Length: 223
Length: 391
View 1: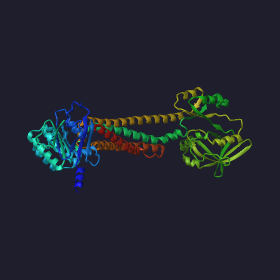
View 2: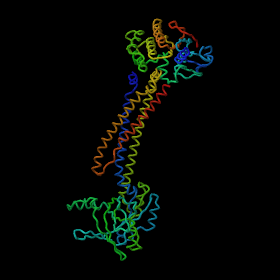
View 3: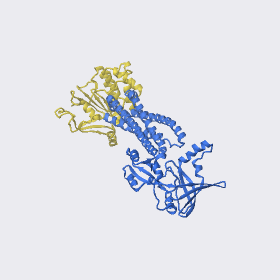
View 4: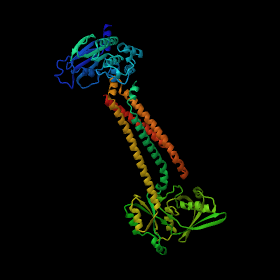
């Protein structure tokens, strides 16, 4: 009975395994001493949270883009273990991996609410009321109906964070998620994200320039 | 939401430009192809059955030749000279009857008779399609073809001025009469009927096989001179033709050449109209594909962001596929309606003038073909461009 339960757990736990990963556009000297690049095996386990720290230009966004599949300019391999079969990028991006992009990838002509709905229309993961409540929790009340073009960078980053939570995921990738936020707003976003991650039993990979106090990590790595 | 986002990327002036050019191109192509199909039988009737490039050639009759008839016959040397011209494909001789013939019809106990003459040409030059046009040595039936002009002369000239009833071709072909052939001390009576009217050969024709046999049976054996020829050209539009015949004192039936030319120019004109309209269509198709390329270039980030947040290539392309394909189909239908409407004008006039029944409309067929080909083409290109952009 115990064995069966272990097997069941293994089948439902996703692992991301990196082998000898190296961005093609970076030299070995640029990435020497990295905990991730050029390592024979790096494991990210669903249900655990990871912090990847590095200075600018050391390939933080590249790492997340490699995992997300939006950049394939790398040597080495990335394996997704625990998935029933290989799935296309659309499925991966709507059901397996969620990504808070550093450049946010928002649509400036749509309102904050519409930007989140655009994603939610794919997944139908939250109701409009829930989306409204999430936005209200981290944005000034009148902002969610304004076009994103009129919002400040910090406000946009919060909209992008809410959008990243409107889908089922086994891993969430956060690329410098608090770079434009003050401590108070950063704490609010961090709480919302970690609540959702815990709720979904997902893994979390966060990149940042410096260590972050708002979130608790199982492992901190440097690039 | 996606619709709201993508709708703003469309450029109305480009869409209207595409709609207009495709409309013009498709309308012209549909109409031209339809007109070609509609008018082809009429042109064919006028020329093709009688071979598009065939004329009747005879020598000019002069005062001198009136006295000495030998001058109107072609010599072997002259025949060879005509045959050697590079624009001449084939020369066929008119065979003349070298025996006496007369026709007679019994009419209410009275016998009306007339002296006659016959000629024949090889069957392939006959412009009358009739099952009765054959001669069998065991049968007494002899089919005859007379010039259409004879009937016209009667109907529109004689009958008109004398207030007599007009005669149709069908009526004429039901009248039977006797043909008396005699010569070399022999005499034979044939039952005869007019099986058709020729608009091309101005003579009273009997089957070539009959005339050859009858000439040997009843005719003066050594007399096989020929005064008229059928000349088939490789290219009736060759500029040397009129001057060659004029220099050699030969008469050609120029109207034949004219109708050949007319058919040729009609085909040429149609070809150009269709070619230009096809160019317009190709341009309009290229234009809309180029426009979509521009939209993608201009909104590159939008396309990539949509893909990044999880929209599939198909979902991203769907809006543009739907808009462009639906617009195309609407334009095609509109073009088809305009083409059918315009066709209505000339079809009415044509059937009044020629009384022919016109073939089934090809407009709907071309609409259907275009409505399958163009959307498939656009769908493919849009998919390809989106794929190239996001990946």
